[in-house]
Amino acid sequence: MVTVSNAPLASIAITPTNATIAAQASLQYTATGSFSDASQMDLTTYVTWISSDTAIADVSNAPGSHGLAKGFVPGSVTVSAVRASVTGTTTLTVQ
Image (tube, rainbow, N blue to C red; front, side, top):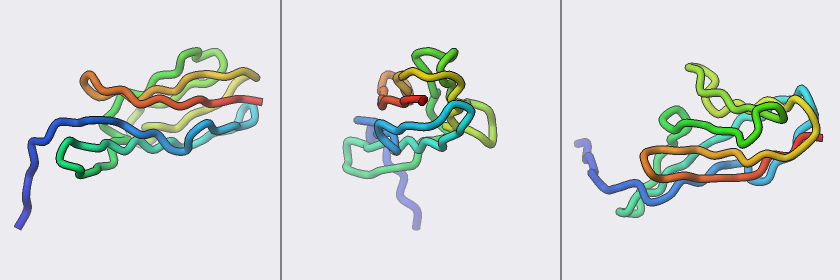
């Protein structure tokens, strides 16, 4: 038996948190949604990934590579995972 919940999304957690990568390196992020009924779900392919500065690092929304970050030049960006009005954030540093 499958139970479907209509519980609203309460928060999004991004892992790994506060990561550091080298320029030209990649890092796979995961977004985990927590719902008001205390259930959790992997939302990596269901969120929109956003980098605060795509000249430093960008995060893919392409099918097959959702959440894959690539560093370009040294600096720090805020990485966001957004679903509806809920946003999770972390910092990515490129060395």
